[in-house]
Image 1: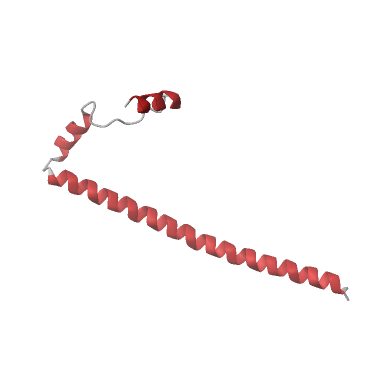
Image 2: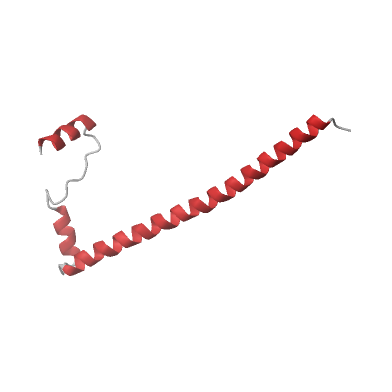
Length: 92
């Protein structure tokens, strides 16, 4: 027979384990929700982009040529140090 203190400690441990299991279940649900929302956001962005391209009536080859032109988009240069990026922003 276990002393009363051991029984309470075991019950407390069981409660903590149950709470942990519930928290993990909730985490799993929220992770699925985040993935679903990210996917829906991406789909909406893609739909908008396609709509903009269709609005200006570009063919796929015309769009490709447009995107190749320098200065159309200023994509970040991964090799450029952060300090230089900030300096350029502050100049504007």
